[in-house]
Length: 240
Image (cartoon, rainbow, N blue to C red; front, side):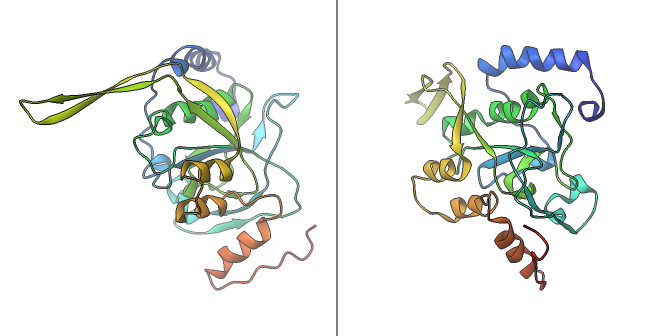
């Protein structure tokens, strides 16, 4: 991508224009891309490996535990494999996640395209570029690397309303969205945020999210579990 290796004033101007106008006033469509298909868990993440700005606008906030290449084989162009990273509790990458949960009718679900724009393209304006090898720059959570942390971004519209009408002659309901002001905020911890979307309960989905963003000291356990599923053992000897 031109974003990874060069500056493009035309593309930058386009993204800046969308960020300042359309992204705050209209629903942005969810892209038709293999890394973003079937996000059944209702969460996605973007991770960038480097910054092309000095000083760095988005400081590294996460450590990569491992990449399951089989999960993102269309991005990696490799059928199977994995990468295990040195686990020294030093942040080397920048990750940003967002969630809409399993309620397909929520305002967060309606605005997930806007959240993707914010976590992906808007951050590129700050210089965050280059995906982690073997993984997409942005993707459904199951296609992304397992990491220790991710900034939690929430895009919502608290003053939007849904108008529901009933067509008596046809016997059907119809609905329309009256979109209000779109706002972006930091939602703290992505694991806690997702659990709140699920009603504050431990569900299979919320536990899955906790297994993908594992916390500062969670890499060893996550990697051990992953390699165990392949009949292998993991030793963290030599790492701090």
